Amino acid sequence: VVFDGNKNRFIPCENQAEDKANYFEISDLDYIKAEEKGELVAVVHSHPEPNGKPILSVLDRKMQVQTGLDWWLVHNRQIHKFRNVPHLIGREFKHGTMDCYTLYRDAYMLAGYEMDEFDRQDDWWHTGQNLYLDNIQGQGFERVGTPQIGDVILMQVGADVPNHAAIYIG
Image 1 (cartoon, helix red, strand yellow):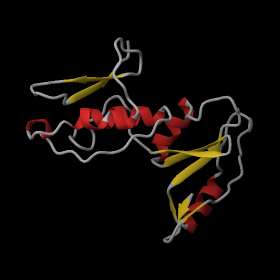
Image 2 (tube, one colour; image 1 turned 90 degrees about the horizontal axis):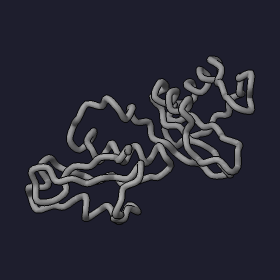
Image 3 (cartoon, helix red, strand yellow; image 1 turned 180 degrees about the vertical axis):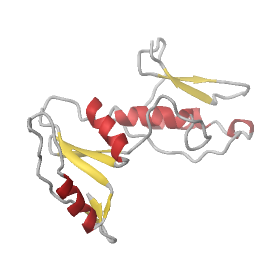
Image 4 (cartoon, helix red, strand yellow; image 1 turned 180 degrees about the horizontal axis):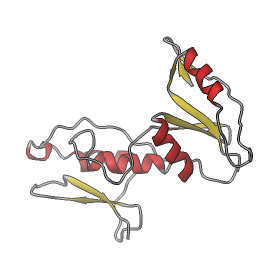
């Protein structure tokens, strides 16, 4: 997909992979032709297994980070858009753009669940705001008794309201 200055345009490319049923490979020539038509904004491909989940494979994710582009996945006639995000482990903390909320928002997006972005200033928990509790139910979360792998855990660190989050990994 390229942005031609006015709108996004789909530029079809031939799959050059030897095993076309399981992999795809865009030729250098097709890549260059697409770049000549506008700014590359996304790579689009499909996962043909109808009962599979519409998520990027491990190899897809590796290549997404390498290309620096959003990847769109066509699955059961629907397009699922995956923002290009840095690896979840090893991020440098920056409040509001690369913080604990960003981490679990990105992790859930990679698992196929899109969540809203919230503007947040540093120290919001000391200014009467309660961003996690005010917004988490609207994102489809609910309180549970015993966490399961992948659940979000909210914590209070030097604050009267939850101001930190983590993903439960067991």
